Length: 356
Ligand code: AN7
Image 1 (cartoon, rainbow, N blue to C red):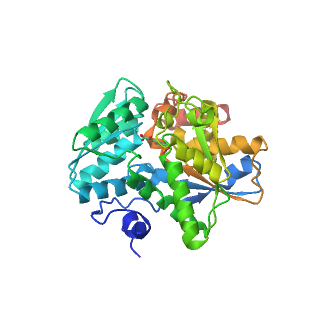
Image 2 (cartoon, protein in one colour):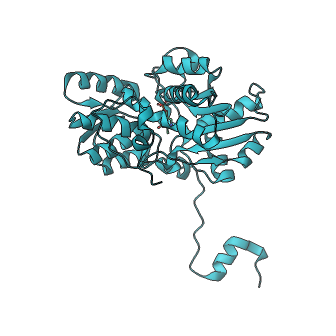
Image 3 (cartoon, helix red, strand yellow):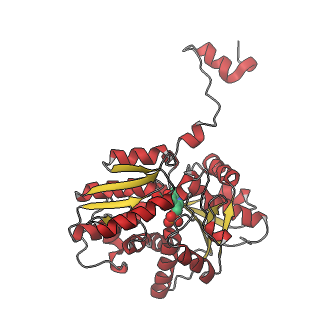
């Protein structure tokens, strides 16, 4: 059967108004990749799968919610959409708005958006405004301006974003035949964890697929849900989740509690280490924020507070590594430069061992 995108495949399960006019880039349908080497590295004895959301059309999971939000907006004749973003929402909104013939405006925190995301927003034709402040400041501003002007808000406060993002939970259950025992994922503005929990509950009501326990993971420098209060100046290398006042924080805490899971924080070092071993052991390169869920899983297993034995665990990797190339290149050793001669290449590769 040909794939026509998420609204075609799962639209009947999504609470979208009848005026919705599908705008799709054939998002979703992402692979659930077994990660046996990584599971072994964490102690083994369980099945680990990576839901590789970086393979969506604009390189992140945001496309799932965006096809729904833009389709709804298109159906009621919206001409301009706006969002605040740490980068991925901006790129996704810009792409889907272009496809719908709309103008998009994106507000980003100055100097804190990864190169691949900003480039995406510009390439797709968004009007980009930098805010000399945080993501949280930018979000407050777009909420206000969308109340006062005929501009539709497409942040995950928009309920249709959550509807679209539920589809990843459906896909996981369809692929495994039931829900995994644990689901781990990064948490920033908390739209995604909210959507997964809603999606798993809905599928369980319909098809008895069971429910996962949810491990939500924040970066230690931006962990309001772990600290129990907003963070005024969030700071982390994982700029995607550099968020101090999550819009759906309450719902994230509910998802963790109702699922008998929890929300924890990991350090930037743990995030970068996990990003590296995921790429170097499994061939899956994700942006730093996307490694946070797995870093949290590794920490919980190592501490003995999560027993993975015999379980199926799914880690959501939300964005592609290409979104943030500088995080890798700025700390790498410069590759050697060799003149274009075979003997020089042999010398560089083999040193003294080279055949004479
Ligand atoms: C790669 O783009 O908030 O908890 O403005 O880009 O649903 O916010 C991005 C968030 C995880 C956190 N991983 O998801 C934005 C933005 C990646 C992300 C998250 C984001 P939420």
